[in-house]
Length: 45
Length: 565
Image (cartoon, rainbow over all chains, first blue to last red; front, side, top):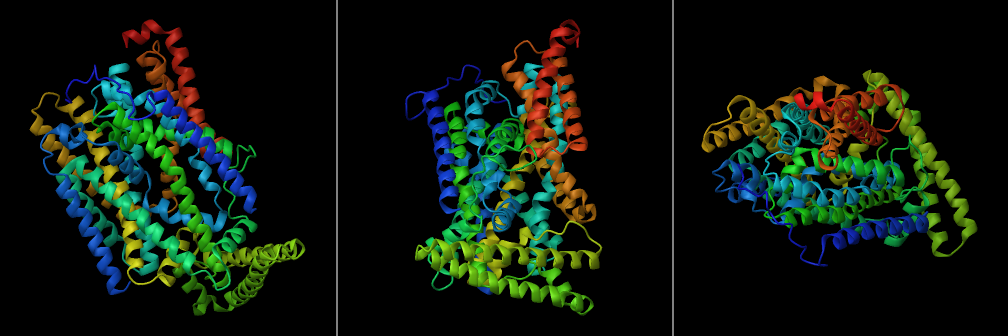
């Protein structure tokens, strides 16, 4: 079996300090991509 | 294929195997063989996740799909970042802390043995049927284009993945995935720049983009909600999120990638990086397809991109019937070419009146071309007694082999091999892991020494690789069943996701509740499949909701029986 990792700590991310901030950045990035693609669709159609 | 192409292809494949053997050294315990000793950095896991997901047929057909249908397929991936955030916050820490080799092992810790057994069986059936197709589908495309016997191609790919997967386990699989992903991206970038370079004289890159947009090929976002429409913003965000949750959270071929992380943070980063990189990558692949469409506005494409079908149409038996169809196609192509060049010129001169006129002419000619293609396909199907002809998968490779220079053709065929091998090796490795950990060790031989399980893991890996080749050899005889097999994945993911949601978020749900919920979820999905016209992306939502609702209700009403079970 793998070594005991039951107490494995959830260390902070290497940037932005906390995981909720990283998740927010990912979701904002998704929203930005969708807006960008929408503008792309409208601009060239 | 010219000698330089063979050299590039052979060199790339030899490089993949050698690199896999080199990186897989030292896999001498079960933990190292199946989980890489939990030493993997985030970037290796991320590229491995992307490579395992991107099969050869995904790569071949995505470009063709943009040619035929535009870029709306990109919306399919909009739900992925949402799913990756949810998995990073929930599944990744839970799986890591539970000390598990497989996602299904976690279900026994949370519920009971029967729920684990049912989930493992679902995975083995679904993934076991898909693994052969990962080899067969590109082999059949290469068979049509180059005339290579598909059995030899599948056997070659099978032997290559067997060598490094059996020897080096998941470490070899992950590092070769990284290498294969780099080859895939490099090949696509080279193809893109060559397409732009080969655009007709007088058509600039921006002209090409505006042309593609004018004729509806850059339709990346569709805001209209429609349950029967496979790709729109809402099906992508909701259906896509559920599909990605199922695939990345419950499918061992993906879960095993991030279980190899050296820490929870590294595993989370790998999923989040995948979420951020995947959408632009798919957008780029679709954009390449849209540019191939623009290329063929001035260079006459074949009526049908499948060369065997074209050969049949031009043969003596069908020649008389094909002649008027070919003439109709030829005339429509010339009219479309004139309209496209006029459209580009009118845009450059800001002449909106001429632009509208040319656009109308273009659409009219395009309808004629589509009509001629449908007629041609109908002729071929009637002559062959076949149904459901579709040449989308042949569009990009037809372009590659006709127009790209020596060496680049070899590189892009290597990309197809790399994509097929990365998907298959990941699937074989995960199937072997579930077979050994969830079946053999759990039910047949629970207390053997580590070296015994290592040996059984190697045998199971060799078995699943051989099975994949064997299945691929006989896939042709399955005929239209192949489509059903492809659909099979989406028929099972929803209930798997539901049972994991119960495990993660509903503490009071019992093993029996989860088990009955899973069966009810499957029943609901099959009902939707057989009796409704709902698009398959929604099956995951339906299955998951039914599993969760049934699991909660059963656990509430029969808690005592559940505990006794």
